[in-house]
Length: 203
Image 1 (tube, rainbow, N blue to C red):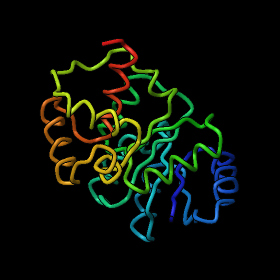
Image 2 (image 1 turned 135 degrees about the horizontal axis):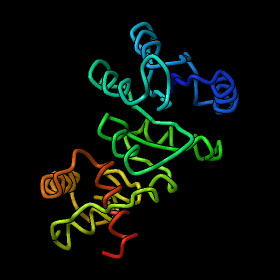
Image 3 (image 1 turned 180 degrees about the horizontal axis):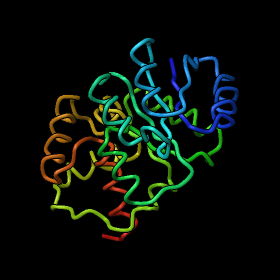
């Protein structure tokens, strides 16, 4: 798993490089201090995941995420920051992020998140989830859709959901597609967040 780190704090870059590289599955292939440097770097090397700080000079993480998503759609984007609020999390997801965690999260959790995002699963820090103060409005979902949504929000892949609910993977994909249309959401990451928003609000 080839990772590029992007943060304007060189101490953060150094510490992340050392801590994450302790995992044998992780290979830090490059570091950048702003979004513009990151784009240049990604044009010259192979990367699977980008850990992208939000607040940076020259080009911030949100703009960089949009450009990375457009130019390198295969690369997974994981936002890494010191704070979390509804507006920031929402904007990061809209920009194309597949995950969101805080720099204060333990290294083990950061590694788990990176690996999950690399495998295509949506992941967001619990603290970032709690930052949502305005739960999304849900249309009524069928019982079957609710069951799939609950499993998806728990981090299961389509294959795992299919096995647990005795469905085909094609059916699971179709159910997720229907829910995305009903709720006017972009992807499974936003579906998972919406689920936890509604759960925390008691709706």
